[in-house]
Image 1 (tube, rainbow, N blue to C red):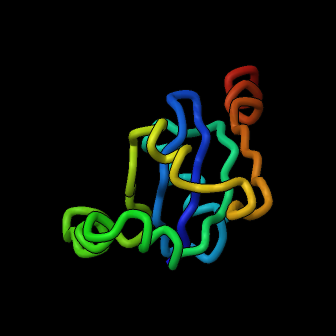
Image 2: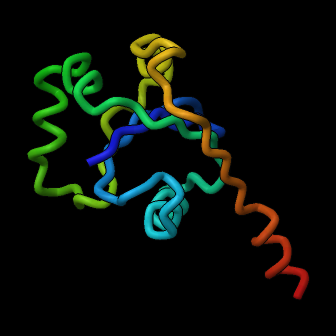
Image 3: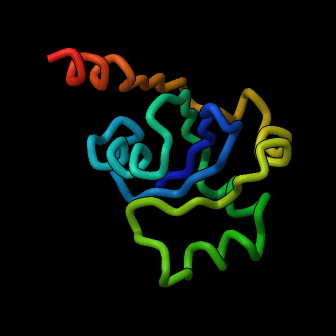
Length: 107
């Protein structure tokens, strides 16, 4: 399981995913299906995320309604941003599929 702080148009969110990387095509499709096609994401240490979110982390991990592929841990952008130090963030992954959408429309 991986955790990430994702900065999208609606603000920061924290996600959990079973995909092997934040650039995995399956995760990109899942995020796009949730309306997140353009973002900057930073992987977070899972143990730190579990410690900061405490019981809520376990609730989200055990929620049978969510798929293992993508679970949203926090949609409160202010809290998500404040909970983690910049030094705890992994390298940024920038993704923008707007260009591929435009190319498909123009074709």
